[in-house]
Length: 275
Image (cartoon, rainbow, N blue to C red; front, side, top):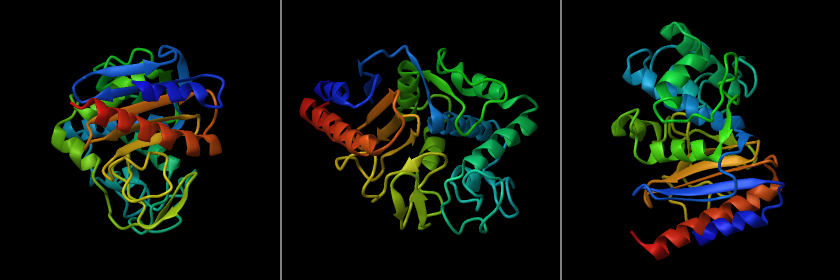
């Protein structure tokens, strides 16, 4: 895919990227076996594990979790009212979209308590092993908000799972990638305040946000996540295309420019090549 050559021009030391389609085809550039910190891309793994736990009836989306009045659904959707990095409520659940890493740490503890095993073991059994993510590391005590690391090959496999789910049903994934608690005002880290600030269950929904880290060609239903370590994963369900990238430079102004350019080029290539 020609668009991936753009990654060679990124102002980073090392970067790698890939594109997957609904047909199962994948294209890559760079070293796809080198591990990188995933930072908040960890939340995509954790969210998928939570969805598995819901289908296994280990937990339910409407189980109370977090501050009073909050549920598992609130925590996944960053609507629990928790502060970004502290398990302290700064508003009531369902009022604002406050991106909270603390909420994901609580989710990991909640699943651990319900399943009777360390969350790292639950994640391995529910997601890492079934998807063959052999290079991904998430040890005992790692943060469910940002503690994973791994190679692009594994991140691409995760993106492929989100195109065509196997560890959860299509209906469960559809729920997770639809807007939860519509209409909430919030701040997308690195981009500012949006009204609304759309989010699903652990996965950001692009909606009408502008500027954004995906491209102008991305459908509003596009969902995914990025990490401050310098990587991202997005899935455009209309085009049945997913794109992933990892780098050794933290997110910053360079990424705000480079990532949308890559997204638009990927989707343009896809439209040109056809089914």
